[in-house]
Length: 282
Image (cartoon, rainbow, N blue to C red):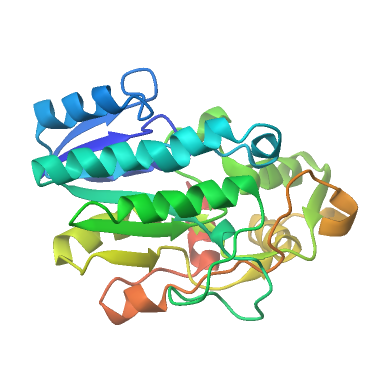
């Protein structure tokens, strides 16, 4: 399988590259080598490489910055995806694109399913929803919603480790850990997402949207406490709430997602606790 990974320099992109290199020929493209907002460059790259699959890990993730300037997230998260979908369509290539829990409004009381209504509440979220719609312009496509990423190759350097990596660092250092107590998530281990992505392609699942997250739901306080327990350390929590945080962009309060659809099709996602244990062991 020939695979082009865009956004390969990020946390998820690195895990995807590592996973697919075990099984095929991978071209890893970071922003410097392939800017997905350059439609001409995207078309030329896909036409030249003729990959079987394009896996798009490129994203603009500055949620608050997007409120001040909508153009960067729209260029990357929406129109960049449109360029990839057009190139995939022209070359008969499968497109995998990662989206986010932020497309939901956070008013749920149980993990979101793929058929639940979307209702983005900030500019970043709206740009990601547009990206989902544009990805569907590729005849064969997968939109995989992910969230609260942690772990992955190269994380020992301390760069791009995600919120959980920062939490673990603070616990190990004996420092106070500021965490949200009223935001519920499905923490997701990037190697598990990468493995599930390959399984989806290998199984030839139907095109569409899938929630590709570790199973289960927890507040960030519960995640921090579980990490401390597994490390055999104490933890000093400084409680944060969304109302007191006063960020420019509105965050969804309950944004856990259910991977049950993938499970019903034979792609099992481990629990977030199991993933956390493996991350800490690594």
